[in-house]
Image 1 (tube, one colour):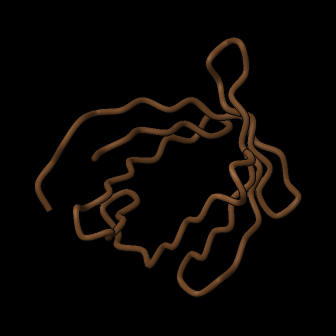
Image 2 (tube, one colour; image 1 turned 90 degrees about the horizontal axis):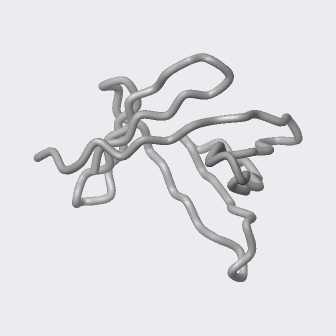
Length: 84
């Protein structure tokens, strides 16, 4: 799957391969992403660094995120499938 996410005005292209690999702006990253007990909280492991994240969707369709204690606003658009 391919997504375009804009966070605080900066745009990123994210690709998720069928094998679980993730690319951000065409750079491979080692990512593990786990939801916590059905809550809008997630545990992220990105290139061996751990992050706690909280994610909620606003009524306007934006996402309000808090990652490592820092707040962000983002929009997300799904671009479809791509072979990797």
